[in-house]
Length: 263
Image (tube, rainbow, N blue to C red; front, side):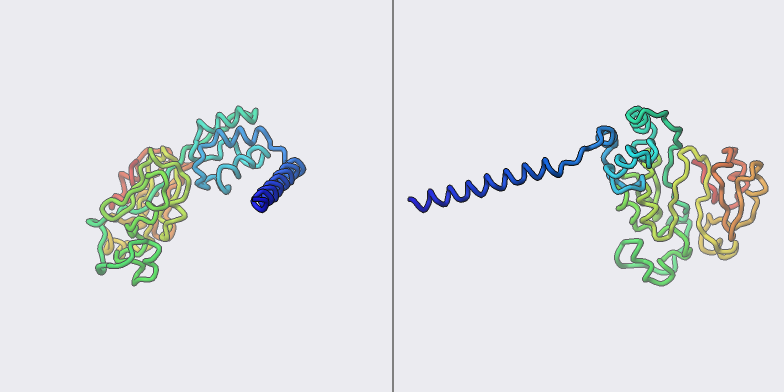
């Protein structure tokens, strides 16, 4: 019995000592937190997607509180959260442009040719190890195995008939799909862009048409049709400068292969 009591006293004493030690340490090493940083963190959506360029919402909150990041830098929260944070920081809310992911490929199962049947791991990043980088004849096209789908935590991308398709209304422009695509087909463009080139092929016209029914062939008709100097052809591929584009649609009207998508 005496042994049991002694053991209880020893364990209790050790527990009391550790508790006192931790209490004193917490007071000694206590770091004052910035109330603005905490308020900003609470205003952020908490997705921790990294789309802002910082390691999670806490990293962005700290940067905003220090004046190192914009109050509207959270792509998920968008303009609404930006205004709330601007109020917390006591600054004017900055204008922000809503962005969305865009897949520069329309070569689905009907329109794009295939060189062989692929049976293996259904992951786009793995296809760099197979001939021609995938079964599709166009080595620039979407592989359709959904690596971007797995990367999107908002359910904004799906694979439809062999190509990735973005739901603009669900997209938060976090950029995870952009980083995940091994073909670099996905980019962020303005939500109200109106028109974008849905092709990434740098093949010359005859080769591009051999591989797909809807390729950009670099003919330049879209360039001539554009009155705002927003369209140019670089390396056999048309590119639209969204800052110059006035959404008139003349480039899409002139495109022989319908490679320019209309949102």
